[in-house]
Length: 234
Image 1 (cartoon, helix red, strand yellow):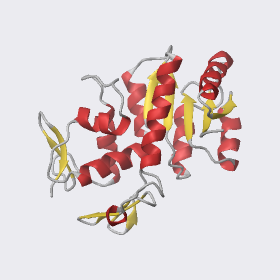
Image 2: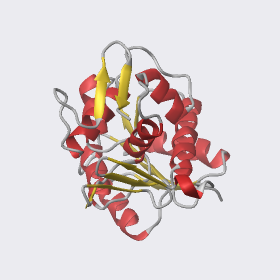
Image 3: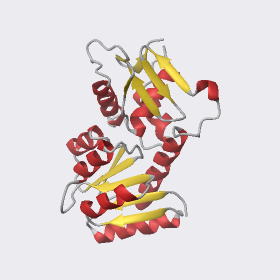
Image 4: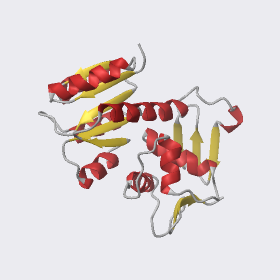
């Protein structure tokens, strides 16, 4: 079997549908209808990606996502919701989710999102880098180890989600150059479902700044270039 994917949705028909499409792509699926059962699985089983419904019968998908990140599991998390509301998206991303898709969704689009997240996660995971002299990036008290997927700021661990790690790495590798939100989006996900109204990158940048104690008004690391995007000064 391929990568192991956790699916948590109390709507059995939807969970079963996701399972069928993922298994057709040779993924191993761990399927649960409640967060409590999923938590027991998470504690005992290695997972490569999680798909979490927001509206669960016991605890919310938001809480489940937060618990995953509190235990420092860095695999990608995709949130599902029946409500296509911006506040849900922002909340999920702020709690550490990497992507978001609203119900009803096309199963093939969900599969595409899964593949994109796994591609990016593997790219930045330990053992994936071939160029050893670029395994560690240093910048103004910031130390990023590409091979071990670790980041330190002023010698203190900086706990980042896979997407946050990817954004910060891209900005560090392009120091001195402004990167638009669209360019960052395509660099990370390699997919074409970006639109001008998509604020996924903006939310992740804000969360990165919070973790790095960076400020929007006087940033030390990630600067906003109005009308262009974001950059880290060289």
